[in-house]
Length: 309
Image (cartoon, rainbow, N blue to C red; front, top):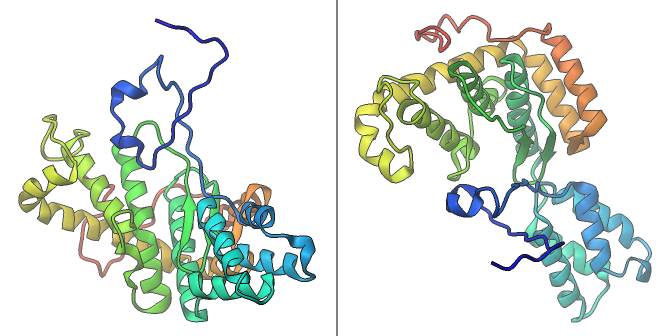
């Protein structure tokens, strides 16, 4: 065995769960770090590094506007945008014109109605999450295509914390219904969507964590395995999803003015992190009466609250 002192080995993946546990164990890759997408300042810095800001007056402001519109995008996306801008600029015109053209093509400005919908959706997640006792989110982003709330990881779940997470996941859909009259497709638009995560969470509770009717028998909750068990689980999953959604909706209805004020703030700021986010979360928790847990269910829902077994 060869030992190299002072050498640090790094690796990157977009799906840590897919990495063989033998590779991740102690003595190989000891530490896993989650790298979140850059914020507005980071995106702007990536564009400045690749575009000659000093070459044109006004380019700095155009870059700031581009970073604001790209909120939630990766650093690689910002680098790709810069390369496309330089390629377009070689055909004639200014960097500012090329940047605007590429930005409009790749990140068209959201319609006002869509922007408000996305903001209400993310505000619903945060208000319900705090009302149900989840830890404070670490960051909020609102882009032109979607928003994002970054929550701290949880080492272990109890049934109660898992159900609180379930309500939070369904709260964006509930907020759209309460505040706008109907929900959009945004809650279920991809395998990483709110509805997909909520379904996977329930499957883990039922099949892997010993928190369901299956008792302590362990079954894989991987998609391929779930497809074989979904027929017998479907009625219970549907019931629990409906119950969690009802409780999330009740919280949103009770605190609708708070959700709408929070959404307006998010539309104005586009990015909330650090002390500014902490201060806003403190205001929300104060408005919630520093309560932990969910209010009584909607009497019209006709289903048993999740916290009752």
